[in-house]
Amino acid sequence: MNANSDIELSARLDDAGRNQKLEFLREVIKLISDNKSLLIFKTIFLASGDSGDTGENLRTQFKLTKKQYYSRMSRLTKAGLVNRQKGRYFVTAFGRVVYDAQRLLGSAVNNYWKLKAIDSLGVAYDDKVPREERMKIIDLMIGNPQIKEILLSTNY
Image (cartoon, rainbow, N blue to C red; front, side, top):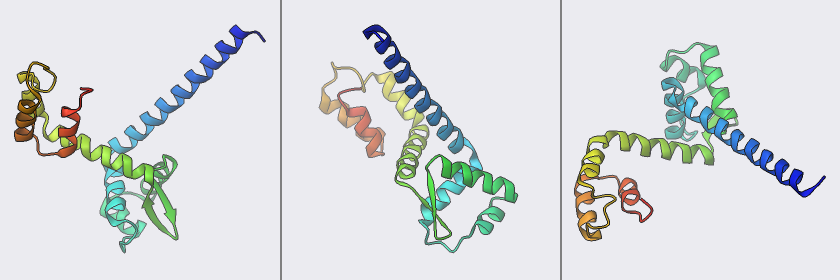
């Protein structure tokens, strides 16, 4: 093999890895976009394995057939969002990050019109507006500290 073919092979492998990551991300987003799967995921997160809820209780609570329930649990497990230990489901470290990101996204949706107002004022990205002024306006309009941090970051 010559150097060009090595570079070409490396580029193909990089593309394949990137495509796998994008496919995995798509699957995770698709999974938490399903209302019932998201409700199950949130319930497991909030219960942290301490709840007396069994699969049967969750299944009847969300009006799912056994197949629907176990299919969703299987997908949550395969995606690495939850893990089963001693008959109880727990949210994994990856699941906690996804849960937090989903909450942040929900907060952004709830603040959509405030964010649009900030955009229309040009406050978030106009370097001509002093930082202190930007901070005051964003602080008055947005309550979520993570969203504030994002808007006030220098990379915006």
